[in-house]
Length: 113
Length: 113
Image 1 (cartoon, helix red, strand yellow):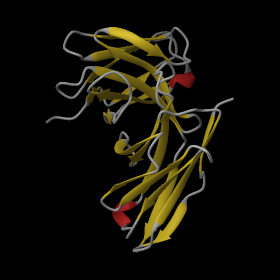
Image 2 (tube, rainbow over the protein chains, first blue to last red; image 1 turned 90 degrees about the vertical axis):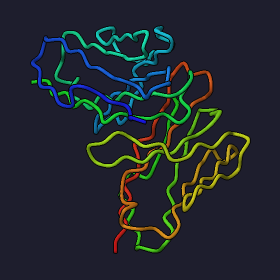
Image 3 (cartoon, rainbow over the protein chains, first blue to last red; image 1 turned 45 degrees about the horizontal axis):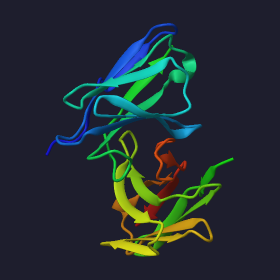
Image 4 (cartoon, rainbow over the protein chains, first blue to last red; image 1 turned 180 degrees about the horizontal axis):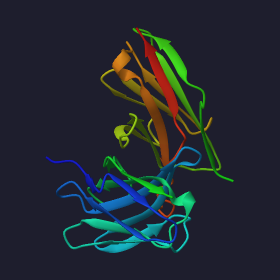
C-alpha cells in the first residue's frame, strides 16, 4: 500500500506570495491533518479534515487554510507569506477521525525569502 | 499553560544497552499518548500508542509505560542498535480532538557502536 505523498517536496517563495501544498493520504484513510514543523516550535497542529470538512483548527492565523476533496486528498494554502512561515509542512492521514496512529508524509520544505 | 517536556539534550547510549526516554506533561488529561520516530528530513513514523487505562505496552524491542499520576511516559528501547539513532517524539491527545495532536520537541537518541 502506498504511503502518504506530498507535493512539492521543496518550494521557495518570496514574502507576500501565496502557496498551495498538496497531500494524498493512504488509500482508505479519510482523515488528513496538517502540521508545521520548525526548529524553535517543533511540530504544531494546523488543522484536520474529515469527509471534506474542517473538523479542528490549531492556533494559526487565517492566512493558513485548507480543504479536502471527495477522494480524501487535501490541499493547504498559505496566503501573504511571511519569513516566519519557512518550515517543514507535514501532512498525516489516519483511517478515521482523530489522531490515533497517524501516518506522515515526507513533508514539503517551504522557504520564504 | 499546557506543556510537554522531553529531554532536550541528545541522549548517548552504547550499543546493546537499554535506552530510556522520558516524556513529562502538565495541565493535560490525555486520553492516550503516542510515540513517534523521526529521521532527518523525513516525516515522523508511528511507533506505539498507549491509552490512559494501560500501564505498559510492548512491541518487539520497544516498551512504553504511562503513569497518569506522575504525568509521565517512559519509552524504552532494549538491545539498542545504531539504526535506532533518531529523534523520538511523544504526542498527546486529550480525546476531544479540538487541539489536534500535541507533540513534544523530541529527544535525539544516538546509539554508539
